[in-house]
Length: 372
Image (cartoon, rainbow, N blue to C red):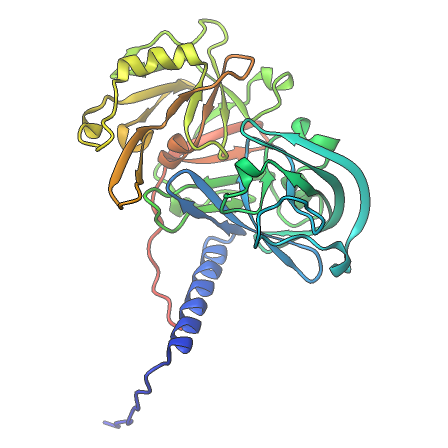
């Protein structure tokens, strides 16, 4: 037996913080490489917003963005932004050796805000994969009441090409065209309760993040007129009973949207739905007694319980408060939105090759031992 004497030297606070940062970086690296496909680690903010990093330029300028399947443009604050929030990074084209001037004007209206600026081109890196000459918007003015307090800097749209302002190319299309991934397929795992592990996978799916097989729903033909990741549901049920919310021939058109923090639909239909569900107490005392919702798509029922469609947040005193995560929206056409409450329950894949969206019960990633 050979004994080797060991000496323990306590870390300073600075050294401890540096080690913590290295562990976090290694954990993210493991998430990227463990299943053989590139991915983006996402942060869960109160089950309402999920955001991750994107790098633009050479050398890289880092931004935090919402990866949004309900829109189709990437935008970040420009150095010349007149009202972007203090402390947010600003893209500086003069600091990038790979910048290319475009100059087309840009204006985008979301359901809850807008932004304006101009188009530029630069190397844009998503999940470690660089896209050369990617077209994005430098925003010079944004809706401060919406984005002024947001924890993210911009939005990276992963919607359909037909919805893109200025007809800019889609990131997945470019990743395939430039040989960075083989398949125009991506998938989201969205965690619950602020837990870590939320992930966007590029080029395929991660089998460790779901149980069972995917059940696919084709993109609806109406997506040619309504340019979204649009699918059709045959029925919406409460406690197993049909709500008669969906048209007998067309069904309920639903946008599969990571950028919407609630389930949403036409106001009259949502009001009827909520009347059957009942109210949730603000103190959450009756949340678990509320009925199950199920949505019939592609011949399958996708169940959703109150542990997903009721949103729990902490008030100023740290007390848990509950609110219904189902809202009416007037979109001009009778659209429903399958937002984050549904996507937290189901690991979801957007298949641009076969024009379909697939769902499988989500499974939290296993914790990995990481030594630094």
